[in-house]
Amino acid sequence: MTVQTTGSNGNGHQPPVPEEIDYDDPRTTRFEKVKAAARQDGVEIVHYEPQFPERGSKTEKRMTRTVSLMFLLVGLFGTAFVVLYIVWPWRFKQGETLMKWYTPLLGVTLGLACLFLAFAILTWGKKLLPREVSIQDRHDGGAPEGDRRAVGQTLAYMVEELGVKRRPLLGLAAAAGLAPVAVVVAAPIVGGLIKNPHADNQMFTTGWAPITEPNGGTRLVRLTRDDGTPIRPADVSAGGQMTVFPGIPGGATNAHADSPTLLIHLRSDDAAVARANNVKGTGHNKFSTADFMYGDYIAFSKICTHAGCPASLYEQQTNRLLCPCHQSQFLITDNAKPVFGPASRSLPQLPLGVDDEGYFVAKSDYQATVGPDFWERP
Image 1: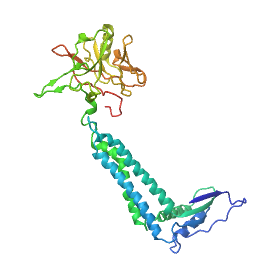
Image 2: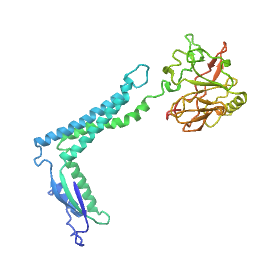
Image 3: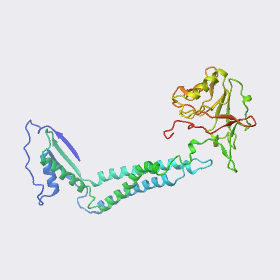
Image 4: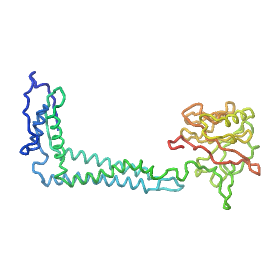
C-alpha cells in the first residue's frame, strides 16, 4: 500500500467534510465502510487491485501452497533447533567429535528458520496481499468517535485481506511454523531452569581435588614437575618460582588444562606480608585462605582470570605476576589481587602442605573458580 501526503487540498482551501456512514448497516460491504472511514480521516483510496482478480484460481492456490511450505520449513528447522538443543552432546570430552558440531548445528537450524520466516512474510506481502495506493491530507486534532470505530473496521478488514479465513492452509501452516520459533526463544531460558548446568561440578573441579581411595579414604595430590617428579620445599630457592602440575595420570597434559599452578618461594619479609593479607583477606578474596601458605611458599593458578592466558611472568622485586596477553598484573603478597589491566578477579590460591615424605601436596582443590570470570561463577 502506498500513501501520499499532501497539504489541505493544494489550493489553500479545506476539503469538503465527508458524509457519515452507518457502520452497522449490513447492506454496506466492509470495503465500502473502509473507504468511507478513510475519507473521514482525509484518506482517499485511489487505486485498489487484488493480486488475483479471480478468487480461488490455480495461481492463487499455488502461491498459497508456496507460502505455506515456507512456514512449514520454519517450523521444521525450529523444531530441529529445539531437538538438537536438548539431545545433542555438548559437554567437552577428550576425543569426542560430536560435541564440536553442537554450536554450528544450532546456528544453521536457527538461521534457516529465520531465513524461511523472512521469505514467507515477504512473499505473502508481495504475492498475496492486494496492491493499494492512498492519498491522505494533513490535518490536526484528536480522533472523534467515528474515527475510532473506523479504525476498528479497518483492522478487521486488514485481517480479512490477509486471506487466512478463506485460505485455511495458509493459517495452519503459519501457526505450525511459528509455534516452534516460540519454543526456540524459550528453550535456552527454560532449559537452564530444568537442568542445573553445574550438576556435575565440572567447572569447579580441577586435577588438584583429593583422590578417593578404594577403601573410602582420600589421598592428597602431590605437586609435580611436567615429567611427573614430585617437589620438595628445598627444590625452589628463595625468590624463585616453578610451574607445577597435579601428580595424577595426565596431570601435565591438556586433559587437566585448568590445573597449571605457579609455586613461589617468597623472601621472608614478603612472606610475612602475604601471610598477614591471607588472614585479613581483601575485597577480592572471597574465600578464607588463612592457612593456604606453607612456610614462605605460596601457590596461585596460572590461568588469568581475564581471558584464560598463562599468567607466568613473575617479577621478584615487585612480587607481581604479569599476564603477557593483555598486561594484567596481580600482586602476589596481597592474595594475587589484580592491580593493573583488565582482570577484575584475584587468581585462585592453592592450599599447600607437605606429606610424610616431605613432598608438596595440595591440601584441597581450589576454592574459587579457575580461569576467566564467567557469569555463572558462584
